[in-house]
Image 1 (tube, rainbow, N blue to C red):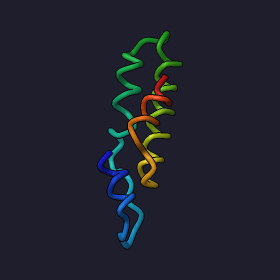
Image 2 (spheres, rainbow, N blue to C red; image 1 turned 90 degrees about the horizontal axis):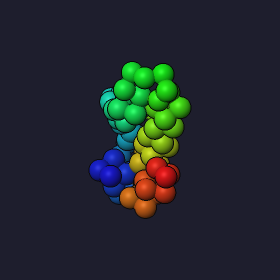
Image 3 (cartoon, rainbow, N blue to C red; image 1 turned 30 degrees about the vertical axis):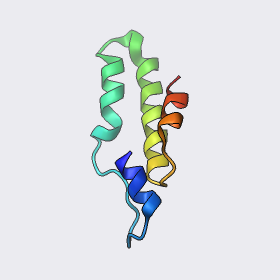
Length: 71
């Protein structure tokens, strides 16, 4: 939410994105939990986080999209 808002405001001399892998890793790791049966869920969680972070880096993320894409 913060990243999206910063990019919505704009005016930076460079592209504002996330700078840590944890932004993409936490949800997939939780979904996976080290179990082979959870690989597909982990992959879906990773894709979702990547899409949401991509939207935030463009200032286009919002909670409605977060919930819609999570379903």
